Length: 335
Image: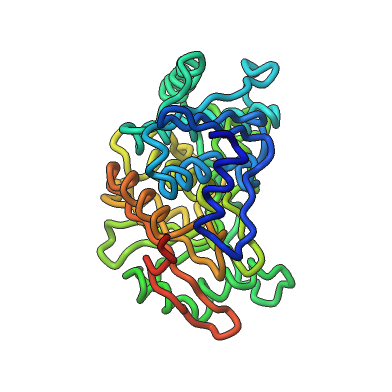
């Protein structure tokens, strides 16, 4: 079954919706194996043609009678051995990290092409044998409810205004420990653009907080009306693993500088948690609308994979014009 035939099968389930498969990704199903080939591994993971996790999970969840296993293959970029710092290298590093994470949560059915598995394994080993530093904000975050940037405005409403109690009640979060824009840049040995492993300073988690039990971290990926890209899944999975590999895992591979050059802001103090690891991570999508392929079956498959590392996952829909949650978690359409 080639790419066009796969698209026809997906469209059968979504009459009335405009479904497209992304350019720069090849799809083929032969003898129960979906082979995905990624042409642009240095592209931004938020774009549909780079969000390979989202397409793989959607196809596996929505076409179960055709797919038993998934094999990922990809084009190596030129100068892929280049040191951290270069923009393409940072995107490629993040790609390899993301591939490794898919192997961790879907070992039963996800594979990497034999010609590429050593590349993924070598990058994972490289990460685990060095000092990888997280960046942090230089100052306290502020309420920007007056901004014309709609997503930042909504973000402020959920953190600094009435929306805070809505998400705290929904997910049992401490209302005194809700924050926004947590940086997730990762650097080798020192925090500088030349030492960046993953894309740098602007990358941040939209919303996050600490549970009332003081043992659970919550992260939220926020999308407002009009943003319906599949990349939300890939983006959130990346954030999940950076947080997991920093503040949950007993074998953490990312950390803050022991003697930071910058004074810790309140959010960094909170997430450092006096050096005590959090016991659990819950990840949430908080959206006004989503891509039609993000169904309950897709949600369930993501949740099943993340449960292997004790990470919870769900989705909630909100209406900013009405200032309310309109559907709580796990109320997506089922196909």
